[in-house]
Image (cartoon, rainbow, N blue to C red; front, side, top):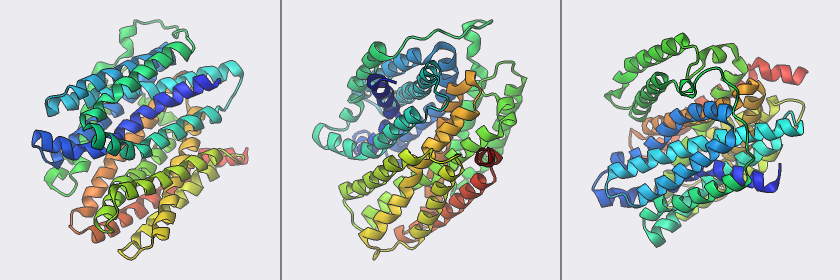
Length: 447
């Protein structure tokens, strides 16, 4: 692919992770502006994850049907609109509307980018486009880690409104680049009306299920655990309804028959439980327990990002993907074990090495998992499968919020970091097991 095409796709893929962390430094002044507490402004983070988690599978389906260019352009336009709404927001409700629009817009862009990669790979006869997929991952990784530092600079110099307004030029740039440099594609041939592509009842059921799940995991230490039965009923209703549909929003039959794809989604979710828990759990510990400044803590996150960027280039080496996924899983287990020994006397070198270990799966495993999604998906559903992989990532992020709440609910930053480490050791150990027992990975090594 040309550099302009790759750069355009990477730019678009970076918008969602950038906005997921860009707002972090703006939450406190927003809360002060509108007189709401931490719980109120936290929904500015959650609603974007919710919107993205629901929209990603829809976007993937639409990209498979209409081609990546159309979805990329539409998503960029929504990002620009979200910037305007947020910058002019005079209430918390309008800011939430901006974040929902942002989540929807950026959710369209990533599956669209994967769809364009698939189209170009087929034209060039490339069976495994690991290079472009790696580029998308590195762009997203760097944007995710740079977000807090960039947000801090923007808030300090221009005010919290600029965090939202920044998306107007970013969206406009994506829109222009998409129109100028993304290749036009033909819509897939179909024997049914376009409106049948959108399973609205299925989407609503999925949205309700994800919302209940988010509330449940975010308040694990309170009486909200009573939402468990409601979540079970919602999942049952969703599965039964979608199985009865000829053309469902979520193709549970495909998932049931494709163990390799389901295992990949599970690995992605488990990986991001750990990654998000580290970012939003260890960073406050560094500031409150060790006295790090926000910029110093941010530099450690940048180091984590740098390791991820480097390891992404070895994410598909070797005859198969097993070692490219097992090594990062073992690195997470080692880093989580090292976290358990953290205390006020831990050296900067020790903390830096621990964060470097946490950075390995951000690059190496992510590229390998995305290649696995590409290989395991039916050709006509590559973008839809890529959208679900991002949904798995957001589910991991939601669970991470619950893990952090559970770990720090007993009070005390030092005891909390120990409890968090135990949780992450268990999650990392499960990730190692899931990776080792995956038969699709072993078959790759044997072939």
